[in-house]
Length: 363
Ligand code: SF4
Ligand code: SF4
Image 1 (spheres, rainbow, N blue to C red):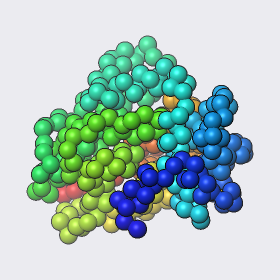
Image 2: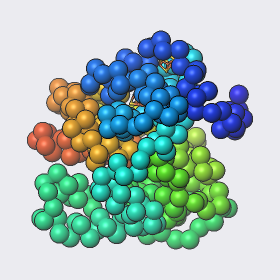
Image 3: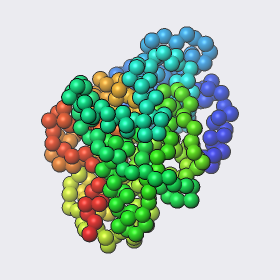
């Protein structure tokens, strides 16, 4: 069924009808990262669907229900393996809207305000970086990456533009610069656009996403933003997939890179083209398995720090055993969380976006 028709049918269904499709078989449980860590039914897809049904029939929401639902990473791994076709993502987003807004810690409320103003988070991170010595060590390690953002210019729907995002605009500016340089050197320059936030954070927390501009043609680096941008009507290519659409334009412009890299595929980027692109560049790739999510999903790294650390731990162990010097990933949240965990573990592994490696390989 076409995605638009599927979305229309889904929107017309009540939350109860969506939840009733779950036959409680439990086949999704082994694929759920939060169930793997906690072993609790209430932190599994099946358990959360049961809680959603209770809320739907008017059972009062208590703190433990809020915790069970808010600790969901919204990675949707459960949805991809469900034999009954349960639309778990839709269920959890709609359920989050029924949770009290007062549940959100001040850090998330502040973050929401900053991402809703285009460029707001970037300006706030620049300001925080200037007083880095005064912030706690963990947050200080995040701020070490803060650098000048790429310049943005007004675009239009007729031009393909790079979507710079909120967090990535400051923390992944080097990857965004690489994308702009690569396009320029390949003779098809693109510009960077400052558009409203993709809305992924708002959807995760149960709010309406910010109003979007008219649909644009975009290239985006961060898999976390892409799904949200597409839901808002934009035509979005993930950068690795975009590069793999026409390899003839660059095959002779790069030299082989015989590097052994570890690859972390974000849960938001299951069908990633990154392995094909890195392979085409001559790299040997060791995919990391972890528990399916590194823990950075949505605002989880701020709201459920201990869970985020437990989910990152097996990935750090794999990296220690592989003894590679480079970890590649395609989402700013994963990159930043894993960088911080690597620093905490005193492991010297550089976390890079494929675009940075590609630029270095260009003649
Ligand atoms: S969500 Fe799907 S896989 Fe999980 S218990 Fe329900 S029917 Fe089974
Ligand atoms: S979205 Fe991810 S964390 Fe949430 S229930 Fe499904 S598999 Fe578990």
